[in-house]
Each structure stands twice: as C-alpha cells, then as structure tokens.
Image 1 (cartoon, one colour):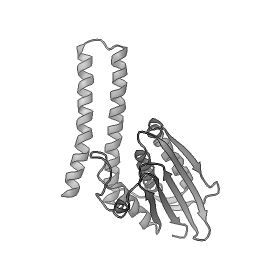
Image 2: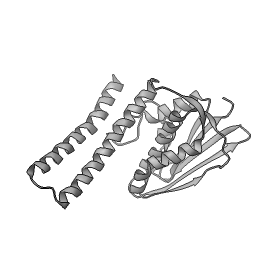
Image 3: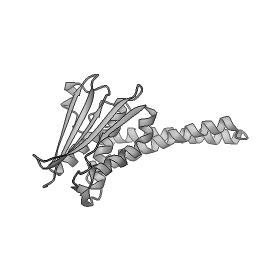
Image 4: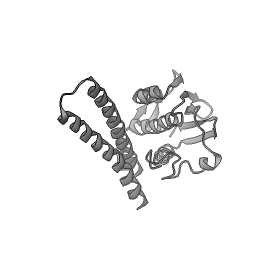
Length: 225
C-alpha cells in the first residue's frame, strides 16, 4: 500500500505537468501564427517535458529492479566504460548545474562479471544523486576506479562537493522509501536498489559524508564472485 501510494503520486505529478504543457502549446498554436517568441517558449516546454518523461522512466526502472522483474544478462563488464556512458547521459544535468567532472580511471581496470544494465543503474543512481546534491551553486564531481590487488576487487569512488548527509540520515540511506530529496523528486527506491545489486554480487557499498562537506560513495566488486 505504501509503495502504491508513493508511486501513483510520483508518476501522476510529471504526467499532469506534461499534459498541461501540451495543452498550452496547442492553445498557443490555435491562437494564430507561431513567431520567434513562441518558438523559444516551445523549446522551454519541450525541455521540461523531456525532463519529466525521464523522471517517469527512472521511477519505472527502479520499480522493475526493486521487484526483480527485469531481465538480467550476465557477462564481462568494464566499469570505466559504464562510467563514461553514465556521464554522457547526465551531461546536460551536469552542465546546467555548473558541475566540473574530474576522472581518475585506471586504464588497466579488469572487467567484472555481471549485468551491464544493473551496473549502469548503480552508477546512474549514485552520479545523478551527486549532481542533485550540488544543484544551484555547482561544484566538483570526482570519479575514480582502481584494481585492489589485496582484495582482488574493483573499487569505484564517486565524490561530490554537495550539501552532505547527516549522520542520522546515513543510517537510513539504503532503506526502501527513505529519501532526503524534496517532495516530488523521488520515492526513495534508488539507493535501496543499488544496495541490493551490489550485495547480490558479493560486493560492498560505503558512504562517507559530513553536512556541508560533500559525500563520497565507495563501491567494491570482487573479481572472484
């Protein structure tokens, strides 16, 4: 019941927004010729609709992963490539928020065994959360990968210079439905899904954060799963 109520609310809001923008575009077109001013308005409306549609897609993807109904194809996965792809998908969000990205990726990073889609979901959640934590003033996003010889594992670190997370909230961070985001930004499934995926591969995820000092997520995936 809690899940249904949350999801209905989260999906209905962006859909209502998209429908309102479509009606507004239709009304402007019905009123007469479309000039330069109207074209600029349409561009803004399309950008908003694109953002809201992606939000719906993200919620549905998280639900599929949460219910474990998504098809999983396992193979060799290079996490450096997944990071590059995820940064490309988030390029607009990072640019709009004036976030500078610094990458320190191990060129000899070994592949891990797993689902490319699942690892992309993990990195998409962590990177987009980091970007949202730096909304407005901008900041720095540092991403690094390395091969830990002592643990025979691959380690990914994502560090942001955002608002940080209180010690009280850190304890609940991976619980389903817990979120520190503003109303309408998410249902709190993202990090619980991330935790479940990492745990399924015998890995570990840690968070280190202080309010006002930013947050670092560390993900470790063993190579001998």
